[in-house]
Image (cartoon, rainbow, N blue to C red; front, side, top):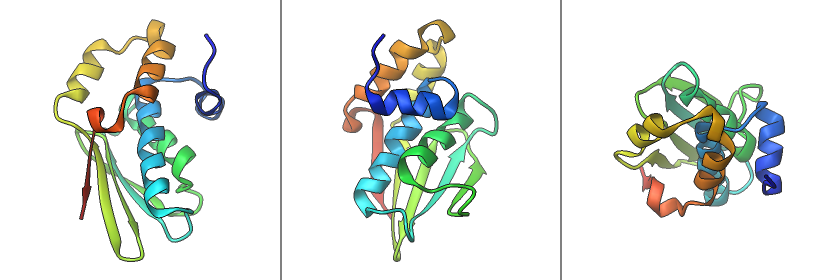
Length: 134
C-alpha cells in the first residue's frame, strides 16, 4: 500500500503505524498550524499510560515539534487522548469527540493498521476532534 509521505515518515519514526500515533500526528498538526513554529509552544498530553493509546505522544512530538528532549511536552494519565497546547498565554485543547475512543478500541486490528491509519489520516478534523480555546 502506498502511503502519503508524511505517514511513511511517521511510520519510520515510530516503528509502525497505528490509529493512536496517526491521531497524535493530526493533533500535533493542529497545534503547529494554530501557533506556528514550536518555539515557545508547550503540549500537555493526557493518555492512558500504556500503548496503544500512549502512542499518541509520538504522533504529537513528530508533528508539533514539542518533544521530551526539549522539555516542552508532558504526559498526564487520562482515559481519553487529548492535548492542550499553550503559547504566549494562549491555550487550546484538541480531544477525540465523544464515542470515538470506544469505536477505535473496538475496531483496532494489527492486521488492518495501515488501512485504519490511512482512514484516520484522511478523516476531516471536524468529524473526529473537539477543538476548543481555553
